[in-house]
Length: 277
Image 1 (cartoon, one colour):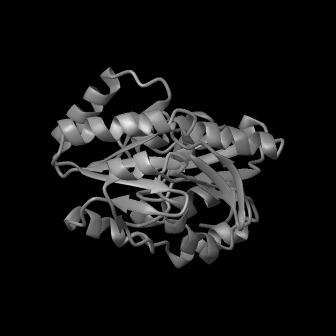
Image 2 (cartoon, rainbow, N blue to C red):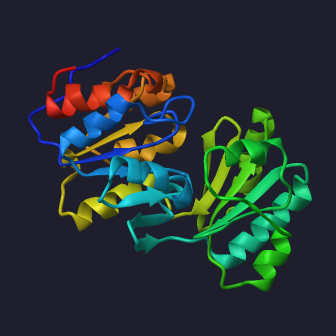
């Protein structure tokens, strides 16, 4: 159901998820969406689980100058500037890797630092992930890496398995271990991501808003997935994609078109700028 948004409040900053939201199913942004974002003349922040290297091309394509969010909020950055970091606690990273490798040796495991992507094997899942980033994964022993380099900041642990039931099982198992400083999120059907507790999309949005002296009602956000929930709740105008789950749609103030129908462009024009569609 499409609901008319409240246009009494002027939106001053737009936040958007990437995969399943801003990008189509091939991971591309349409010319129309690009033009609408540019013509809105509003600060636009990408808020993604991706590493910054996997966002760079799009940032340049859209000529974005404002703060951007990687690793679900683990890193807030702008061109040539690191603004805020929330890496995982080293002891937690060590324990998590040891636990996952012991209990789920078949699971594909990746670690992300500020500049590098570390894996223990390159299989079809990693090859698929490589299609969305210019990064080339480094083959290493992950336990040895974090043991030998205690000062290496790890921002994200990524687990990939095509078995969704197994993924839910792993999530429940890790949550029962009660790590005090991590958050575990399912970011895709086959992806489980672990970041620092402070690395949440909502917290990143709030940080940027405070930095720009903006109120919640002056913020808009687009999302489609479970890990967008906190971000959508943190803004005055949460816009949910038509391809999102019914549960997420309940959070949205308005529902826009799907990611394959230029839903972000449609949402900006209809609910934010009053432009012609």
